[in-house]
Length: 209
Image 1 (tube, helix red, strand yellow):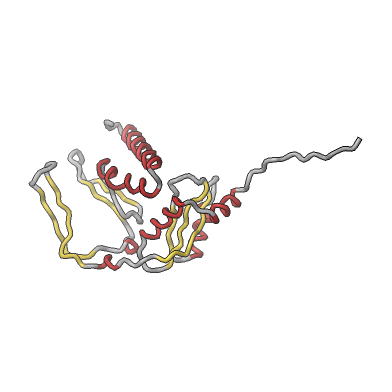
Image 2 (cartoon, rainbow, N blue to C red):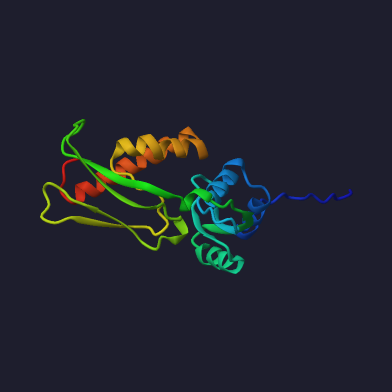
């Protein structure tokens, strides 16, 4: 009786490093839009590299760095790749130079209203020009609260290009941005996560939520 050899198929798991290489070759449309948004945030007119998370391959995709130096981008990607998360350096991409960033304004300012929907507002104006994002080294917000003895300073990320105070502003600006880049499902998920986080933090401070 002739014996026949049978092959048993074994399922092997693709190493994380190989997964990252595969993701590098076949970026999704959402990942490409995320890279494009990151480059557009730095309108320097120079070539830029973007360091973005590719594993896990679920949006939103964290962008760890945007830099003009390839070696720096590769270093950041290597440092951020740990704990099952893989970051890759992409580029270079040509950024467009923002010609409007240095246009002098006759005046810019903030209107402070004492009552909602009131005409009783104080507006402070200063002459100057809009800064480039790349020239900003520190971002902070100082809030004066009715129940606080002194202003509250909030230090933000040095690459923050927008600050939202309250859900109305978040729903008006941030959520539509997420919908445009990632889709409605991701936008609504992030909104729910944000509300849950704010409520949890308020609860730890003993505040009403």
